[in-house]
Image: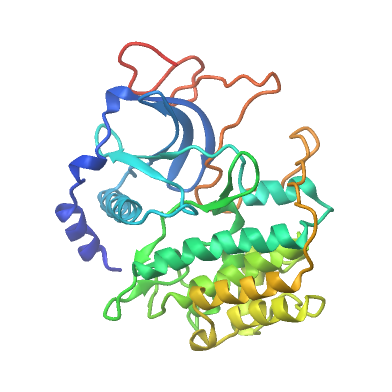
Length: 352
């Protein structure tokens, strides 16, 4: 399944010196997120608060080569694109372990924020403002020929004031090429475009042609969720939702949406990718809709429920939550990479 190409890309991969971090100046604190292939920690680098993503190297030679290739692709893309709605890349190192360092955002994931304010919905101007942040991040990626492939609320992080959304986690992102076959069944089922599935089977790793319009579909599902503050395809498992979308052309209901928003959502999740708008068009449609909403007093972000009251469903796959987690006293506990208290990672002299 393309492992030969992946191994080749590992051999060719080298980290630009300007992005190479000094492991001796990197300190790792509490774990704040975990996915299938990596864990994310709060940390410090040169006295700057950062998020530290540590990639699990794998056990078999095939796993190691695949994850090294994925690591190389991710930092190549992170270092190539800068935008105010993309989590800022600070640097990376390959030894002694594969590490990616980005800015630390304290507002939590969009998923946790939405769960925290339920059953309330976001003010429509806030929801559309968040959607614009996401669309602008995607427009930037696509202008560089990058498909994200895993756009979902777990990979959207809020700033501490809950006013801005930034896109994170490029673990599944790939460069778009007309000549390359890409892996189907990537991303997370509930938000995944139908064309990522085979029309015959859902076998993982199958190669298939698709393009950047897969991100437009995912954006539509996220926008629907922003407006309704409900889980898309409610009552279905992730796999059931994907099957219904891919083989029965099922979508969440857009009937109760304002006409302009309904048009955006339905055009973005239409079955034929060629009929979906690009993100420049999506931004213009969202801006046009904003002008139809009568001016009002500035909208303050809703306060999220405390962690004591908020009950979240299980995390969906993929590295999530590039944000700090603190205990009730407001203190940040210190743990090392293995989760032991009061330790630190790459500790040369002192812990922070």
